[in-house]
Length: 389
Image 1 (tube, rainbow, N blue to C red):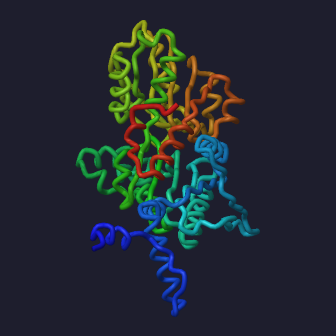
Image 2: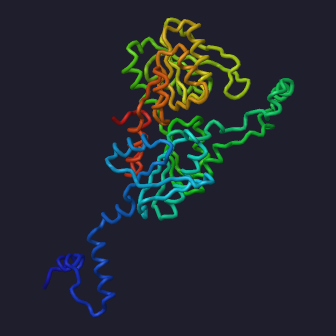
C-alpha cells in the first residue's frame, strides 16, 4: 500500500510534461508548473518592477548624484524645443512595467520646466510604466497656496486697504489664484502616481493632492552642518525671519538645545518688506537665520541688519531653497552674513561663483534614499530626522 503523504507530495511537485496530444494544453501545463515553481518570486516581481530614473533639464547634476548613490544609470531621454518653442520629449528606452522616477526641480525657466515634467510624466504613463513618481526638490508655485492678498487695484489705495482690513473680509474678496493647487491638479492629470519633494512652503500643499506626497525635510542636514561648521553653536540662537517659520526654528532649537527668536515682518507688497520687529534676545549670541526659501533676499538681509543692531555677534543664514533672483547676490555680498547656506534642490554653482559667502549642502543622498525606500516599499519616515550618509 503506497504512502498517502508521499502521493500528495508527488502530486504537488512541479513536473514538466514531456508529451501531450494537445500542444496548447502542453504549453498551459508548462506555464502552470513554472509559475508554481517560481512561487513568491513571481509575486515579488509583479509588485516591484525594475527602476528607471530620468532627469529633466532643470537640475541634471542632482539627478546624476541621485543615480550615482543608487548605483544605477540615468534613463535615456531627449528634450528639445520646436521653432515655435513647444517642448518635445522623447523617452529613449522602454518603461513598460517599470517603476519610473522623474527628477525635475522648480527652478530656472519654471514654466518651461513644469511643462517638460508634465510631458515626461504623461509620456511614461502612456508607455505603460507601472508607476510614475515625480521627484520635485523645489515645488513650483508653492508660495501661491492661499487667497490672502488684496486685488491689485486695491493694494495701491491705502484707504480701501484699511477699510477692507477693518471689515475683516479682505481675504475673501481677493482675486488671487491658488496656483499651487492648480499645479497639483496638473501633475495628477498628467499621470503622476506619487510626489517626492522637500520643505514645501506650506505643508498643507500635501492636501492639494489625491495621490501620496512625501515631503522630506532639510532639517537633519542643517543640524549636521551647524554642528560641523559653527564651533560656538552652543552659544547660538535660531531665528525665524517671519512668524510663519516659527515651527521650523523651534524644532531645530529643541534638537540643538538652544533658544529661538522670531522676527515679525509686514509687507507693503510682494518682495518688499515694510517693517520688522524682533521678538527674543540675541545679544552676544550667534544668530542663525533659518527659512525655507530666499528669492530676492530682501527679508533675510533686513533681518540680519536687525539682528546686528540687537547685539548679535555673528549672523548665519540657512535656507533650503536658494532661488536668488534679481538683486539677491549683490544684497548678500553687501550684507553682514558670515555665510549663507543653501541646499542643492536648486542649482547653485553659478551663485557660488558670484558670491563667496554662499555655501551648499548636498541633499542628494536624502532623495536617493527616499527613492530606494519607495521602490522597495519601505517607510521613508526615517529620513525626517536622520541623514542617510
